[in-house]
Length: 163
Image 1 (cartoon, one colour):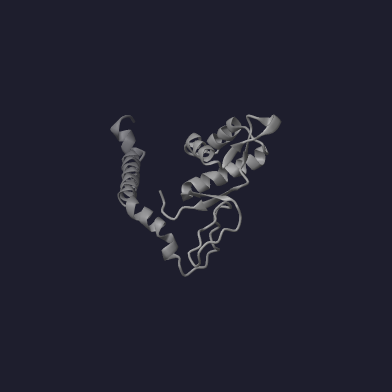
Image 2 (cartoon, rainbow, N blue to C red):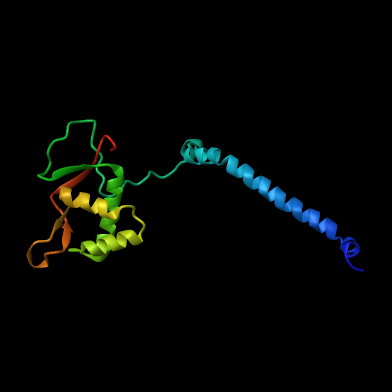
């Protein structure tokens, strides 16, 4: 037996239509998910509001962040220079600080940029240039010229108006 009779005898038509139904059902489900992706993402963004009844541990702030106090006027506590940075640059400074802790101080800018790129930080050169211009990272003095350290007399504060 050959041809269409063999296909019919081996339930080939049923298998073919079942396969087609499975493929088209999968495509319909995929199209429905993609059409509603915006709604799913909106729900994901609002997951904190939706799960407000459940207790979550407080979110940790990056270790360099010092929120400006609004309850009382700030009195100068030390002679540190305050540098106001937006939150994204503070996060990059935190990442840089973690990298330099592993490298040790004084550190090489080339090694810092290499490690930052490997960790997936966006625009590490731009952020490093900003930190150098603001004096957050300074060149080491003495016999270790060409290496850099974190400035001890600089206090990083989150800017009130995000830039």
